Image (tube, rainbow, N blue to C red; front, side, top):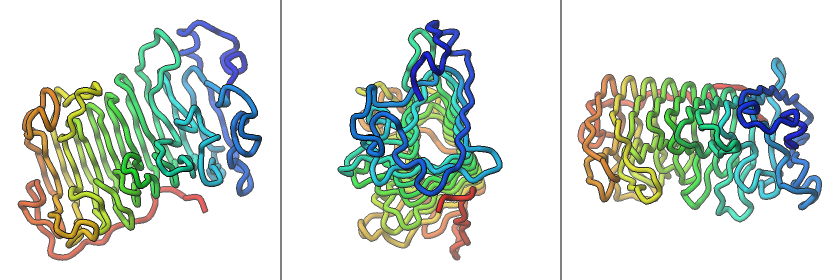
Length: 358
């Protein structure tokens, strides 16, 4: 989608453009219909069929959705996304305007050499000079699989919501790509999420000032995930009605990791307003980790009090407030939270929250 004359009626005034609204409806097609379907640099149409290497900017509030009442369209590559994504970043990129992605399926947006950080949706780049980034981004009824990152990015001023969506089998062996990786947005709100089976990266990583996760499942499954949830810059963390399960092939020892990653040099210090509230949670650990058999598994790893060298400028000990937390294969010490220790493994609902691609 491009050509500003085509999509913004030729306006050049940033304020006018930022108030325009667009709705793009994508109808389902036969299997493979949208493979590499970008008209400038996809392998479907030739490696360098045009310039710039993207189809367009929708500069204004935008809703991109699968046709209501029909199966969600599958937007995909035939194995790698090198030629089919915006400047080597994402199939879609948001800016300083509201954006909604609904009823879509994404598959295969990864770099060919396995060392990439591509994404299906890349959050937060600024397209309109002089317009503050106060965008609201909603991702709803979407599936992401086979990508380096399903969703990645974000900037201060943005608010991101992910609802009733399914992320699985993303990431790569670098450990730098994740099912979901949200940067320093004002708020990340997650509800009705199933995130599972990522390669080495995190099932959910958030550097947001406020992270809220409700009614969601972060399940290692057969993956090699590092953490179910990583909040490396602290901030306000609220979890309610969440199941976290670590796989036996996990690459790290903690289910939930809070603070402990000094990113001052990158402009991402410990958040000034920080707190932890966890309610109605179930933390499931394996008896041991296959890749790290001598490592003790920890439920909630709290590094907020580890000092500025470890956790960044302004860091301080944050004592979590926890209520109705149940753990399995953990004890009250390794759980890291006030909890009730289960003697039998509870059943886990692994059903996706949406109809998935075949």
